[in-house]
Image (tube, rainbow, N blue to C red; front, side):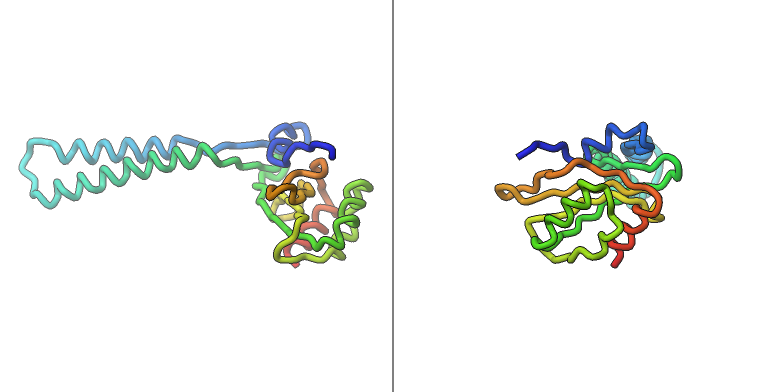
Length: 176
């Protein structure tokens, strides 16, 4: 069985096709941390302020600080792909395809013709899934077939990048 690269890894290298990977910005997270530190520091000032206000500043300072740290840690894992010509974000869709339609799906990928994609039958669970990254407006769509191999879904095709009418057909298939 041929070894294929997963779609996320292939999309990272598609700058020529107009796909860019923008990680999350840590500026907002750092701002939350700074606000938390400032609020905490204000609570430690030696001025006459009510104890309730000092406690509120401490609690809010710690909460903002922790929120900023969590946001930074969560942001390290996320990958956001954008289609450069429209500036739209690619959203992830996972569609399970019935096993009987597996060969039809592979033929579509081999021939690069997705006009009949709406004829495929979707199911709730299956050993064959269609991993799709698409814009909401149907301008761009990247797809890959993945199949269940030893309890893990492995890529069984290259990533196909579609634009125009074929991309719109795939979007209609997703929304149907």
